[in-house]
Length: 407
Ligand SMILES: [Ca+2]
Ligand SMILES: [Ca+2]
Image (cartoon, rainbow, N blue to C red):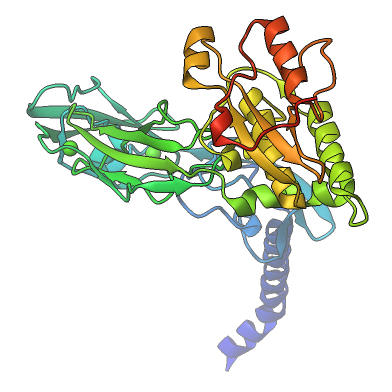
C-alpha cells in the first residue's frame, strides 16, 4: 500500500509540469501556425502556381494574396503580398524554367520553291515557358532532294532541345488551275469584275497569285476585248486563260434615262416645232464641247457620248441633236459630206436638215469659232460658208435628201 501512496504524492507535481509543457507546446504551435511565413518560394514554370497558404510553414490559418500572381509561363522573381489574419507579409515567388522543351519531330515533303518553317517539322510541343523554334541552318527548297534538318527548340530560359527531321523536296510539274474565268458582257461605261468568281489552285497547296491583264479593254468603247488570266506556281509551271470582255453599245434605255429628264426641262407641249428645234439647238451648242475625235457608230452611240462626256466632234453634235429632234417630233434628215469631199479635205462633217413647217433648212450645232448662227440656214447661206471655210463643209448628195430652201 506504500507504493501507490508515494505515486499519489508525486503525481500532482508531474501533472502540473506536463500541463505546463503541453500549454507551452500549444502556444509555440499557435505562434508558428500564425506567424511563421516563408518569404521565398521557388517553382518550376508549367507547375501550378502556389496558393497563398503555401507560404505558411503550417497551414493552420487562412492566407490570401493581396497582389496578382504572374501569368502562366512568365519567368522571374515576383514580389507578392500575403495576408494572414490582420498581418501582411512581403514574400517573393521565383518562377524558374530549368527543363528543356519536349516535342516530336515531323518529316515533311514539299515541292520545289515551297516555303517551309520550323513549325512544319515539330508537333506535340510542350514546355512551361514560351518556346522559339529555329532551323540550325535554313533549308533550301530550290532543288529536289532529301535533307536532314536540325531544329532548335529554345524556351524562355534558353534551355535548348535539338530535333532532327527529314525534308523531302520534289519537283512540281503540274501547272496551277484557273477556274471560273468566263466571258463577260457589260454596258458601255460599266464596270467589269474580272476577279469575281475566279479562283486559282495548285497541287502544291501553295497560295497562288492570280494575274489579270485587262490592258486591252476600253470600257468606254463598245467592242470585244481579250482579258488574260495567268498564274504561276513556285516551281514555275504556269497557266493561262483568255476570256472575251464585250462592252455593249449604249442602249436606248440608257440614253433615254439621260435625255428624257433633260427634254422635260427644256421643251414644253405648247411650243411650236420651231421653238422646240431652237431649244435643242441652244442646249446642244451651250452644253457640248468640241474635242476630236469621237466614235461614229450610230446616232444612239453618238448621243450617248454627248450625254456622258459632254464633248466630242461634229458627229457627237449631230447625233445628240438628231436624237433630241426625233424625240420631240421635229421632222429632220441626217446630212453628211460626200465621200469625194471627205477624201479631198480629209475631214468629215455631219449636220441636219429640219422642216418646222416652212420648208427644209440646214441645222448645224457644230459651231465655228466666231462663226454665225447655224440654226436655220438656207442653201445659199451654207454655200457661202462652204466657200469661206474652204473645207467643203456642206458639200452633200442633193439627190438623196429633200431640197433645202434656197434664199
Ligand atoms: Ca522549359
Ligand atoms: Ca503545281
